[in-house]
Length: 102
Length: 151
Image (cartoon, rainbow over all chains, first blue to last red; front, side, top):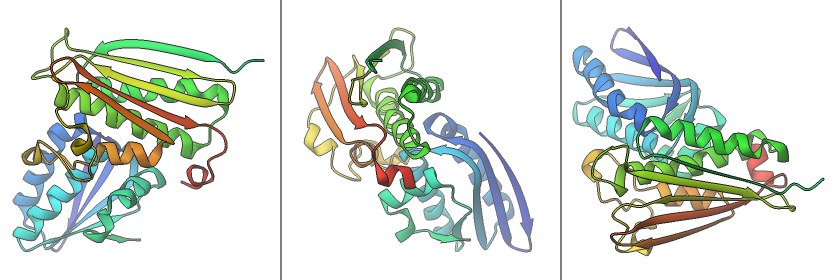
């Protein structure tokens, strides 16, 4: 798992590459939280185009970041969701909480 | 030619083996010409079961804490996968199968593992004995699932 952050004004985009599973999330949570805290974005877009796999650990990862952003007054959006990831998110109702764009 | 085949592997219940395990089982099904959607469904379900064993069955990651994964394919292209651990077991299996139920909410566990398996596979059975371990058995017919093909 790898990721790349970019920011324009107060919109941060995080592009993920690889598998988001339990093993990856052990470090990914704190890494992404640190990036968000460091730049205080108003909006964060997770670009999932490069994600090859996600399981229910990824649901926890997404909802965890969503909650933290809400508390800080920001919002989270999901973009370029691949089919396997989309099916896991649809099954679990992620889109009823976090907006999917593009 | 018969489609019958089987595999068995035993590996330590540690995080780095989650990816290995799901990809091995997915690879095992290739001879049945699964769709990409079916491969993704199987990978996801196996990952859920293995992750459950890694996260919940044992107190810590040690080489002696094992997961046993068996898979077989019958002549009707029905894949059966069992993921077995020898850990603490589950006190109330029916409760554990409820959507969003988790014993570790502080760890951002979604509690959707069993729900995802039930949704992505045709059948799921969870057998557990407290203090002895848990076995998750799941089945999926390969090659005729329209929903999976459209995934």
